[in-house]
Length: 312
Ligand code: FAD
Ligand code: NAP
Image 1: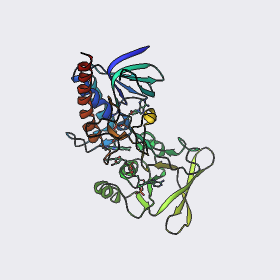
Image 2 (image 1 turned 180 degrees about the vertical axis):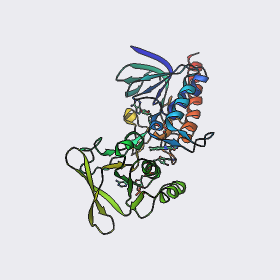
Image 3 (image 1 turned 120 degrees about the horizontal axis):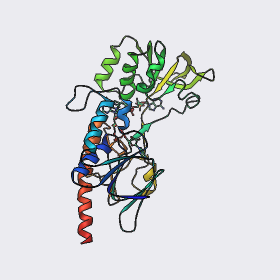
Image 4 (image 1 turned 30 degrees about the vertical axis):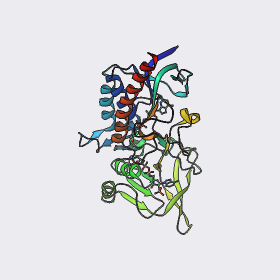
């Protein structure tokens, strides 16, 4: 069955939910489509300490609050993975999920990003059996054990501190001799007794007995020397990749797949907007995703009005 909406929003993370709030408050009919539960990356974040109005709030709680706001003016949330988006001859949009078909005057893409993989031997073999990309989801499995965190950005350091409160010991493996993470996160990590650092090293392989991780082989980026480090878990936080497959053939992304927009969140395709982490931008945060989304929600309204003017 094909459903009709003024605005289809792809993704119900903070970007998608805020766009839904703005567009539905402007009296547009709105659906948010998500391949998982609403909340996006906030569901994988223990505490959020930099969202205005809260000194600290659990990611899952912020997600529930945003969902309540986003649906209060009639926007719907529906489950489904968007596989394809195309522009119809009459300038409206056709969105196809694995569950349903949608027609819309405008589409807001808020599909976010996903974790980059190391590409090291053993990484995929031991995924879910010692290798993880989510400390909030899997940290508790490693109580009283040693874990390795790979990376030097905000995610790696924030999650290393979170894990240190659960596991026996955390070793951060970073390929440089200094971190990229925000100073406040670095300060916290350096002050945590059960966190140590191995600098200038990359993970060459993740090793185990076939059922669980037992060690990582590290390679020194300066000397080329390899060493083995015993560990029960490997948490990988080495950056993000855009989730933009659904728009890959619309010519709206850069070479790496990030969606290009102007300051109005418009892509080069009329009626197609993008917000949040999936956009080509400098700072990927909840606050920047919701800021983008307010602009896109408002401009989706203006675009819908302009279509009415053309029709008259
Ligand atoms: P996302 O939150 O990634 O949501 C995208 C949604 O789109 C997901 O729900 C996904 O399921 C859905 N989706 C994707 N593709 C499809 C498809 N084809 N069909 C249907 N649905 C689809 N920021 C802060 O401000 N403070 C923090 O403390 C903080 N901590 C973080 C900790 C970690 C470990 C990480 C990884 C990030 C953290 N961030 C933090 C960054 C913040 O989470 C993101 O910037 C923010 O979630 C981006 O929102 P978004 O709506 O653009 O994307
Ligand atoms: P990131 O900032 O891109 O950092 C990735 C880190 O991993 C870098 O130190 C990078 O090293 C390293 N790395 C990349 N590829 C590697 C590889 N193959 N092997 C080993 N190391 C590798 O990614 P992120 O930390 O996931 O952060 C993503 C975004 O989310 C950022 O915008 C961040 O600010 C945001 N975020 C915010 C918060 C917060 O505000 N509290 C928390 C988490 C995330 P190089 O330095 O060599 O590139």
